Length: 327
Image (cartoon, rainbow, N blue to C red):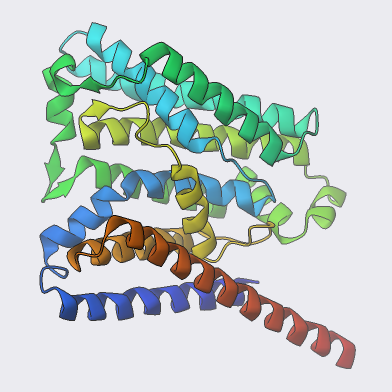
């Protein structure tokens, strides 16, 4: 399993490098430091959500409510910021309130999936519809701009370390935290065990319901972090700004080598999947290709990459079966 994942990661890395070389010839601007940082910054929110989705997909679940949850948290944080004092404490409160709201919404998904045993796709579709409806009702479709936010948040939004935006730093922090959880904590090992073989994991005493509730709650936690990153990136709250993003999140995870049916996936693979999508979109923009065609090309690349991955996975499974039979 590890060798399959590593080979997939290497394949995606090679595709990313090849695309970068091609795009560098199409537009010399592409390989400039400013443009590459802009690509990462522009896809940091997608990356944060995709990392959370990786854990959900590894366990065989799926969460299509991530964009809706993120939008809801963005709106609530925007409303709260208007009333907040212009003090550094406000930033700390945002990092407490945002993730907490996300955890609550994620936990509701997890409890419905684990305890009532409603399929994850049904639960999260329902949650997505409810949240989107409430968000549009509360905001009337109108967005909040930076003039309503405290200056301390605007300073936070513009904060950089050696030229690297706070939004990118949040993405890196989330990636490291999730990698650490999966590799060095008990719950992380349980997530990977269930991904490797659910039946065997349950037989040795792993509580599958607990793991499901955890991964959906963690997805909500990262949606809360993503909401802060999104607000910092746009310096505004747009209730409609994230519609459809859940499809890109799932695509990034699958491009990164995760099996949509569960069983495999890595943080590094997902990061590479996010970079691949970001580079394709940036390259199409630099090539001045029409917006509609950009979506077509992105869709084609996703289909080709996923099809190639599935074919390679089936071949590896067939080889393993032959080895077992011969043994």
